[in-house]
Every structure is written in C-alpha cells, then in structure tokens.
Image (cartoon, rainbow, N blue to C red):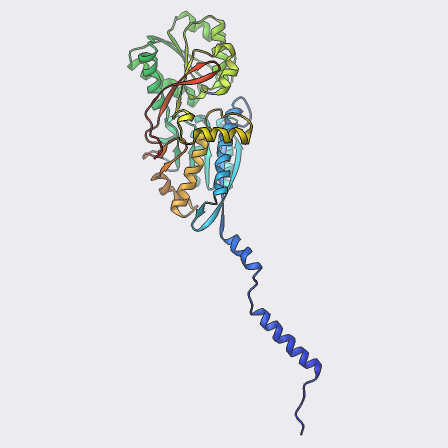
Length: 398
C-alpha cells in the first residue's frame, strides 16, 4: 500500500501554520521601545497661584514666569525620579490677591490632585489656602508670602524660601533709627495680612530702637488717593514715613508726598521694592528706601545669567520675586529626586531636611518650614532704579 502523500493545499496550510507560530514567538521590536519609553516617564503637576489680573498682576505674572523657567529647565535636564524621567507641568491659577478667591483656587488644585503648589504670592491668600493644602496632603512652597502666621500654624506641608516679616521688620526698624536717624516716624499700612503684619513688626522694632511713632494711619490695597492721610501725616512733622503695602499704593503715595511738600523720605518693605514703583511714583520716586529679603540679584549665584534668560524668554524685566519662584520649584523637584518618589509622604521628609544650593541662597528649612539664615537687603531709589545699600544676614550657596 502506497504511503499517503499530503495534498498541496494541506502542505501549504501546515507551512502557513508553522510560519504563524514562529512569528508569535518573536518579540515586537517596534512596539517594545515605545512601551518602555512610556513606562520610564512620570508626570508631575505643580500648581502655581498668584494674582494674574487686577492691580498686582505684574507681580503675579513675575512669579509665574519664574516658576515656568524652572519647569523648562527641569524638563530639559530630564531629571530622574525613582529611575523615571520626570515631566513637569505647571497649572497656573489666578487668585486676584483676594483671600476668598485664593481658597477657591486652592480647593480646585486640591481636587486636581496636584503634586505640590508654588504660591501664593500674597500673605492674605497664602494663609487661608495653606489649610486646604495641608488637609489634602499637598506640599506648598511660597516664594513671597512673608507674614509669620503662614508657617506658625503647625502645618508640616508649608514652606517658604523667603525671610519673613519678623526678620524684615526688625531690620527696617533698626535701619530707620540707627542709619537714617529718624526719631519721629509716621506709619501707614494697607490692612492686609502682609501690610499690617510688616507694619506691626516695624512698629515694635522702631520703638525698641528709640523712635517715637507720631501717628499710625490705614488705607486699603485698592486705594490710590492718599491726600487726606498724608495731610494728617504732614501735621505731625515726621522724620520718616513707613508704608506697609504693595507698589500699587506705594508709588502713588510717594508721588503725592512730593506734591504736598512733605520732606520726610519713605521706607517700604519688599512689596514696593519693584521696577513698577518707579513708574507709578514718577518724579517722586528718588530718595526713598525699601527692603527686600535675600541678596541683590547680581550677588546671587548665576543671578545675572538668570536675569538675561528671563528677559530673553519673556521680553520683560524681573519685577520682584521671580528668582524665588524659580527656587521654590527647584526645591520641590530636588526633594522628589532625593526621595525617589512623587508621593508626598515620601518626599515631604526630604524637603524638610533639604540642604540645596539654590539660585537665591543656600536653602535649608527650620522646624516651621521657614528658610534658615534669611538675608535682608536695604535699597535706595536713585535715578529710576533701586540701588543696594547693605545686606544683613544670609548664607550664600555652597
């Protein structure tokens, strides 16, 4: 009996099956790298909150620009966190410098489960928002809120990379009396958490140094006409007028001071130590003084290069806090890197223990979340710009 010979169709079917089986055993070399790339990245979403509309929008945008520059740098560096390439995204929100709006956007970011928040700009919005972030387990790093209450509520999630009003107020008070020779001082503030808080600290320090407060007046952070207040101030014949508030009031106030022929110089905190102050004050700008936590930009490690990069990218000059917003982003990223995780429970201890050579300073935090060894620099308005006079305290990057 002759052996059975497979028919041609059956032979073809067997061959096809063998080919398919062989193919199924092979790796898909084109799909594997794509899958590996996707698995090797981690997306980190950082919230940023500041006034982006209203009178303080120029300051809020300055903060946001500083944060965005840090995001760009981190993404270009391809930072590794837990063995994965980190992709940073910034979710910008506008709090309009209003505490109620601040809590609204804080809750929005908490609901979005952001990994951390950079902000807020103002103390008045930062303080109520801090509870929302704390309850949601979200790290918050403010680059500019100076009221001491922010870090004295016991929230382990709250940090700042900027000296507070206790430090700033004490330096301003001593400077007013010992360096400017002021014996009779008038104080005005805008009744915000920042303005009133700084004025209170200045008041205590000036009295301790031997000055007399001849009057204490109040305005708002929306007012632009100060004729009535300044007329009352003029009657006390002060050696110095201190204002606690932002540049949007400080500028017009300085201009009106000159119009009323009040010869005493003005002294401001960081909120008026801006480029915009000179535009708003006009020919009434020169001769006044301000303080700014930190060292002058030119003395920061890489400060001049940062200024040039900022101008090239955003086609405008740094207003005030952009370098600190940059560092606020960088310290969060560094803590995540050291912890090898974007989980708050894991990177929060690393952030609290951080010793980081930032753009603005060597950044370490105390037990409250405040920067250690915060510097304060005094400036005088000359020729349309703030000219540095002296710096007290501070620690340069290692």
